[in-house]
Amino acid sequence: MRNVWIVLLVVLSVSGCGYNTLQSKDEQLKSSWSEVLNQYQRRADLVPNLVDTVKAYAAHEKGVLVDVTRARARVGGLQARPEMLNDPAAFAKFQAAQSQLSGALSRLLVVTENYPQLKADTGFRDLQAQLEGTENRIAVARNRYIKAVQDYNITVRSFPSNLTALALGYKVKPNFALENEKALSTAPRVDFGASGTPAAAQGSSQ
Image 1 (tube, rainbow, N blue to C red):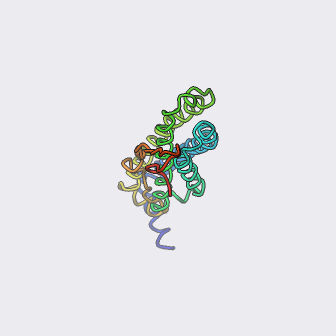
Image 2 (cartoon, one colour):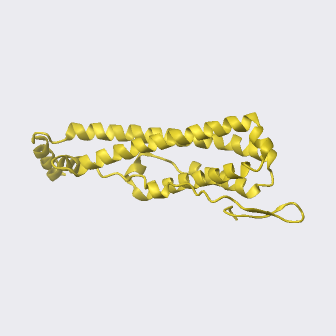
């Protein structure tokens, strides 16, 4: 512990040690992350009403509805604590859960194209508009977070601020992997048999 304080005193004595910059970048990162969480929560809050509205017109699309409900439950089961930003594995798990929900919602919206009455429903149109707006806000918030992490990580790695970061315990943060955030956009394929009930739905949970 004594050695840490010695290093800290030496670092702080160096002109331009980066202490204030680290504080600024860290606060910016936390603020950006909070906005990402807020927008993801906004989307999750829309899901129950969206599922109920679709069910009223397309109750037999059970597989797709179940997928969305389960994906939302996975998202809700993850606690996005501040410590997650220091845990790449937890961050990746959070990202995967959000990506699954994105994919499930995409498949649900594809299915709704087959139901003119549903598409004409005022409540559904309102929910769809809210969802589209929220997805746009998520994209903006994630881009800001990505930029904030990049700026923060550069500061943590650069000399002499890297010495200050080491002394104070600041570490590189994980970032979104954009290729893993793409929605699973494969449309569900429902095979209606002679009974008029769906035999299978591609992409639905078993």
